[in-house]
Amino acid sequence: MRIYDVTLTISPTLPVWPGDPPVDLQRVSKMEEGAICNVTRMNISVHTGTHVDAPYHFLAKGKTVETLDLKTLTGRAYVVDLPDKDLITAADIEAAGIPPRTKRVLFKTRNSVHWGKGHTDFNPNYVAISPDGAKYLVERGVKLVGVDYLSVAAFEDPAPTHQVLLKAGVIIVEGLDLSKIAQGRYTFYCLPLKIAKSDGAPARAMLIGV
Ligand SMILES: [Zn+2]
Figure 1 (cartoon, rainbow, N blue to C red):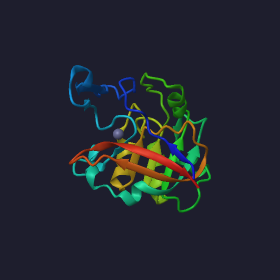
Figure 2: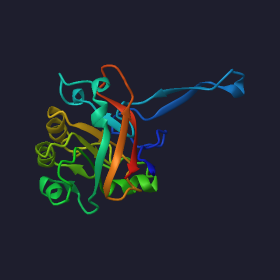
Figure 3: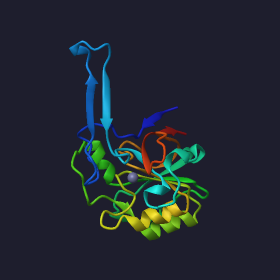
Figure 4: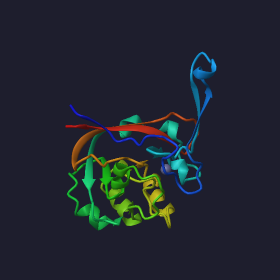
């Protein structure tokens, strides 16, 4: 069994969405200053690094993150490698050869090159899923969609793709580092922090080779 950690490391150099607070980690208790132990305070957006979007992120009456179903967040998944796409459309997904009845799809794109190289600047030209691509995924019965940048939707107009997926109850996982992952079948585990009434939560995510 091979475990692949596809989680971004939360650190002050991690790019964040423009306008979101940068990652702030402060040690508030320091052993080198005589404290009995080290304690760090973390000040971050819940959409930092590898994270899950809850419906409440784009739907005023949507479910919040602590209520999301762990059954959806865990199980068989398919990683699709689309290295040449700038926007993932319904036609691209249809042509990608995703096995029938796949419930969890993770999209590997050129975005993962950034993580592999350790880039620290936000890139607004990331690869996203178009609204028609999102509709197609819903029609296929997909329940979880993962992407390898900080948003599933294009930078210029993020609402439509998010709304299509979240209205249909699809769980969105963003900020996956798929740089070392080949296309194919895996078992996926994604465990968002259980934060009350939150529109999202950072998560630890891993793939297990099958
Ligand atoms: Zn998000």
